[in-house]
Image (tube, rainbow, N blue to C red; front, side):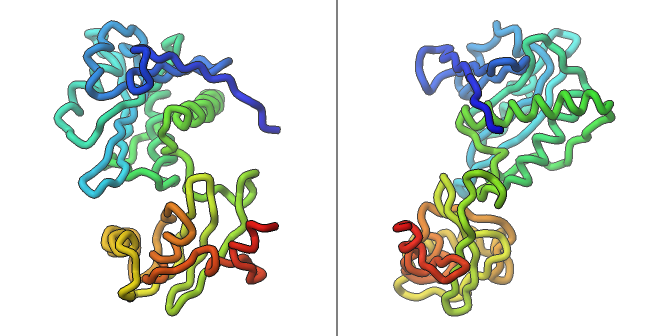
Length: 282
């Protein structure tokens, strides 16, 4: 049974685009969302001198959402999370804000943060919403069964907090088929294109394994042409999608797949052949 959650957001600077401190009822964890330009204002925050895990969010040169995930341990000089974010990463230009996780009782040791870094990194890779900038797979460390259970509970809460802070880095584009908000699978065939997709709360997702039409027509929308230039050779290999792709609408998805100006409401159909426009009337 799904239960409601109470989340407390403290706008540390009194504005929505400033520093945000986030806590959740019955959770010892705590998160800080801090714009890169405001890191210097955080030097006196004791919790950010502890051990923890941090995320650096930004965009690359092609406007792709990117994230780097790292861990920070308390140093002999008393420095922890904030120092780790500021010093080694400040010369990297792609990130604009950080989200840092620690605990109110300073309970994270080296083993715990290694496990969390590994799990967060692999969860982000599996979700596929962000390009993960980590070059190496973090070491998960060796933990007891009891500690693993506690850390997995921490992760469950951290996922909720991260989404609340505006980064759905752990959420796949398409909900699992057995989730409460899962939409039915839809299918599209056009020339040599054969694709599967579904509607989501974010837009329309074309699913991995779909085949796109290799050619485009003169009517193909400029947005679809740009998306093809962006993804072909990286996510589209030999006309087949190797990852889920999110589009703003069913028609945007259909145009990308078909290489022409197409109506998604007419061409995306369910397993019985009913077009999307008719499903909306049911």
